Image (cartoon, rainbow, N blue to C red):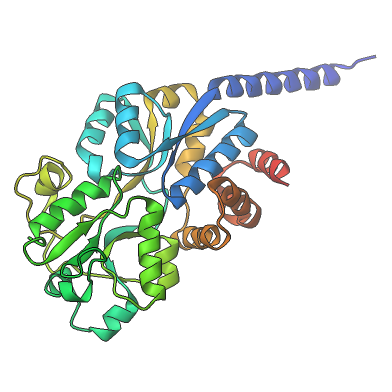
Length: 336
């Protein structure tokens, strides 16, 4: 004979299953941008595993870069998530889209201890203690000869498609570097940028260029970030000119404070359910942990997927705080 207690338990179980199914239905299909640098590849793949295994979402990854991903999200509503969007180069149109309610910031600080700027190797800083600022380095193009034209100094900028490419090009003009004997060098890809720095440092050669932190190379080589020697020009000129292709009269400036957000579409916010939104809100990588994972990726030539599994296996003290105990158990079981 079935008691009222058993009937109640069965009823509660049915409610739990039904609510779980509703949550899965709410999650549905999610498209995530796998941006073309290592930390973003890691984050996209961690999101994919946790959303699929922990929340039952159907996740696909699509290639991305700062400006192209933002443009696609803003005009087409796809992809649904950009896990690591460095917003400095798209801040005005992003704020416009956020004000209109088409895009949202799910997390305004998904990685701690961030920063962009211009760097030199530690051996260069030690050999030339007079090079304390960007203004100091600009006076010495002879110390950083370009491979193709040694009569000019080489400043290594960002690859095409990265938002920082426009910023670097405009600052290059603002500091009148071409007339001071410098050449703006496109490394061709993220790997090319990394390779140019690595080769120079390991061969004890001078190197001058753009990079950001936290990253494996900055930590591995203990690179020196230069003060620009001039103040930040202010958001009006930075956002209105420095970050734009049509900036006709850029002014010298220090780099603006870097902002990185996890950006989502309005469709995802409305349809994915609160659990997914809470996960993205809680998902914060300490800078030291991110550096460690990026070193792992470099040393082991690990893909974003490989690194995501390694992170979930070895850093449970970090990611388990992002999700419920039940969700953590599902993810843990899936990655064994």
